[in-house]
Image (cartoon, rainbow, N blue to C red):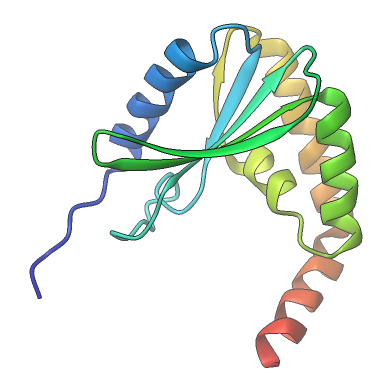
Length: 141
């Protein structure tokens, strides 16, 4: 089988910054996360992008491709993000919380992005043990 291309973390970050500036002009900041950003990407990986606005009528999720890079965007404001984080945590699958805690910041409002990351990291840290136990229980099924 031929080697398949997948982007480096630096390429993914550059693409995410470009997408953030062009597609989410009114957004305050974003986080770029996922396996590619951790250096663990494969040819099946996408770029995970959590985009935060001051206000949205409704949260949404969209998938698209830029060049050869698939992107999965989770678009929120603080209110919708709080609802999704609470839901993720209650199910023991803190996906979006983890993306914010580990993601690279792309910003127009750096201090707010750092504050939200700190808040999500603290929440993740408080529940990390239960998330890990649940992950192992699910993997055993």
